[in-house]
Length: 236
Ligand code: NAD
Image (cartoon, rainbow, N blue to C red; front, side, top):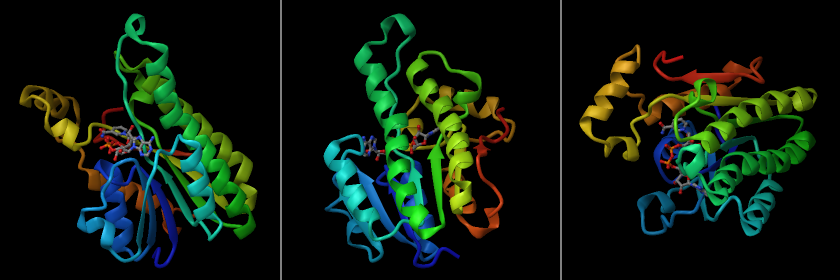
């Protein structure tokens, strides 16, 4: 369904981003992946239809590389890269605040701006942004992270209103507890508590979120814009 579409994704070397790359690749898309991690020694870097660019999406150089690639067309942009720098409010430094804002919110705005300039010329395009369920209910020690994820939901709604007339759809996805490598390394009792809190009684898999991105990118979602699709097993 997305055969030969040019799909840009940030943070595609690990976790949800990696599963999303696999899903879109299986569906025939051409992937342009941006991540800070060096994957040049892995099989992933040699696959056809995947162009991997090692860069920091918050850097001037990264933004220029992405802008350059977008000149050749961009059908889908997935702003997936995200970081956490947790501390309760009195312990949170300005550096912790700024770094999370830069990756999780400012880069989403900047790359969306670049993509929209190109998509407007094409009169079509889809932008998908990584939010989180914590945007809806807050989370201890994550004032920076939660502010960015709530910001992403608001940014998404606003862009949807601004660019719908150009045939561009903009949506966000809010994952709940997903079994990424980081979560899998947590003590079993913490994992058990997360599962207990989730009405479907399991952690989400990275593929669950990849499927949500795929649905929103596809024609099946052609009348859906400005929304936040929650993939959280029923937590909120
Ligand atoms: P992850 O840490 O497994 O992978 C994130 C990837 O982004 C990494 O490969 C990292 O190198 C890359 N990255 C980070 N900063 C970057 C930068 N400045 N430039 C380029 N690449 C950068 O993360 P994940 O758990 O798969 O999460 C993906 C997204 O989903 C994030 O936005 C996260 O906030 C969100 N999310 C995740 C969960 C969860 O449970 N895993 C829940 C809610 C929301």
